[in-house]
Image 1 (cartoon, rainbow, N blue to C red):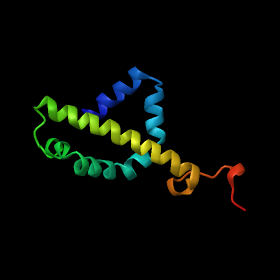
Image 2 (cartoon, helix red, strand yellow; image 1 turned 180 degrees about the horizontal axis):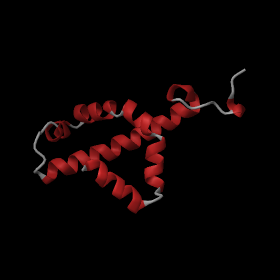
Image 3 (cartoon, rainbow, N blue to C red; image 1 turned 135 degrees about the horizontal axis):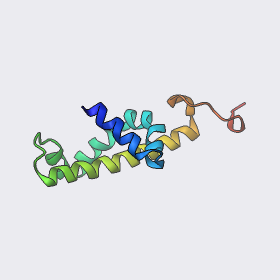
Length: 102
């Protein structure tokens, strides 16, 4: 059911810059998403309380999870851009010919 819903959503949306960029950087997001979440739980203890709840009936829990998700994704994208400019081989990209180190 979820695969069908995702397929229908993808067909309805068509080309979308946001989805395309997230797809391009999905490896970086998957590799680094744990660290910002842990930082949030250390720096802002309220997020730990909300994120550790197993129930999602609360609007506050869903809102906190969504906000943390968006911020963590943006942080992962920023770090991914830095990594791709310094050492792109780490994330499976090829180094451009202009920036090759002799």
